[in-house]
Image (cartoon, rainbow, N blue to C red; front, side, top):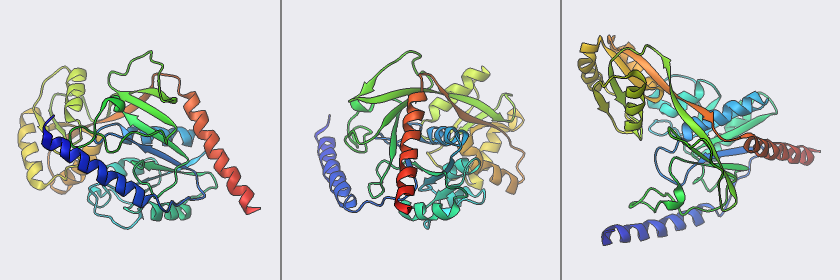
Length: 323
């Protein structure tokens, strides 16, 4: 590839290694189990739905999951428990998580961990980091790397999508996508790879024809899914990932949707930002909201067993230190 990109890649690698070394000098270890959901590749690897799936599974097993994330594109800097439906403050992903589990946003994840201790209502609290693999200052008890395409065949930014050179300091891989193979048994350097299928489901609204609006990393995947399920090809309006919708955007969307009786199909991430705007502007837009449902393809029981074993080990060590 071009010499310029090769030089940028070398500079990126040097900078990333320096940053990792500097931030790894002092690692904070909370006395609450920490499950990390992360990736090696930038953009669109399924961290958000996988985080929700892990939280749901742990909740069904009797644990109290508390989700921690930066709150990308939100304005909140200090660690805060999400307690309203304002995407401008908390970010779209935080609102999705908070609809099901206690969620804390903040740039300083260590500060967020300390806040989580005061938020926890039981002695079974488990912290789940959404996008925490590159947060080197924080100890993780069990880390999961998400991927849609095999990270080992990718290259470093800016030529490829790798945020760092893949290492083996994690416990499991989750491969997820619309076309996840039904029968695959693989691992990477001895680390098991579990396959979960992502399926778009209509969460609210109708399947009537309308326009499609999307502001996520891989908008074309959403457009294809909706068109496939509804068997129609409506106008596509694509925005940048984590886009903050404005009144001008709403006017454009409304104008495009007019001939479809103002029906608009969007993702759950977009809905948490569009719905308040629609209400505030008294817009006639009617949303059909689609969300991702995670469906295990391979046997995930070994993954859950390993996670629970590590959680219980942390609880046991905490108890022995208190005696």
